[in-house]
Amino acid sequence: MTMQQLTGMMQGLQEAMTASRVEQERMQAELVASQTRNDELHRTNEELRRGWRDVDEPELVTPQREFSTPFSQTILETMIPNTFTGPKVTFTGMEDPEAHLTAFHTQMMLVGGSDAVRCKLFMLLRPQL
Image (cartoon, rainbow, N blue to C red; front, side, top):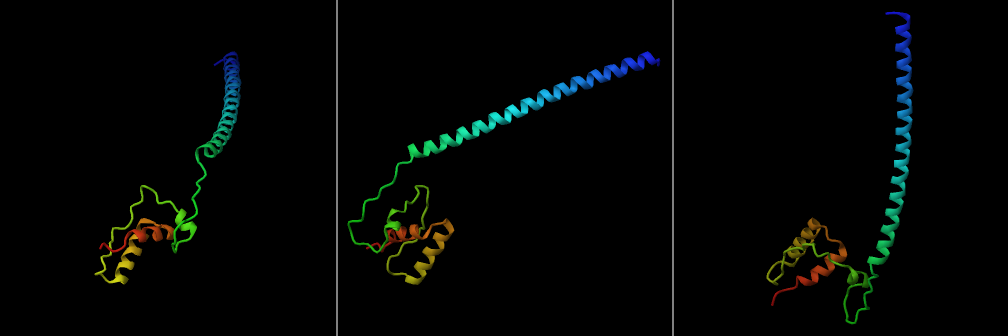
């Protein structure tokens, strides 16, 4: 290989490196621009979510109770989700009350019912006369 060929190869490699650097800088600039657009979209999305919640979630107003009940207003206002499957125990009055309470409590723990939901659902499981 001649010196002229080596010089030509070196120049070709330098040009390729320069082109590679230019391409790398262009790609870096595109990445920064993409990250900036992503941040802007994220901020806009959060603003829309906050605005959407303000518009679509009407304030739930529960009227004050008009009947006598042992439950607090907080328990009365607790919503039971439509997808919630409560316990399947019923009390006919013939069973042991302790066993009934234990079965009810166990089933509610398994399905994840809160104390307020337990109170509301327990009213529904009164004796069938």
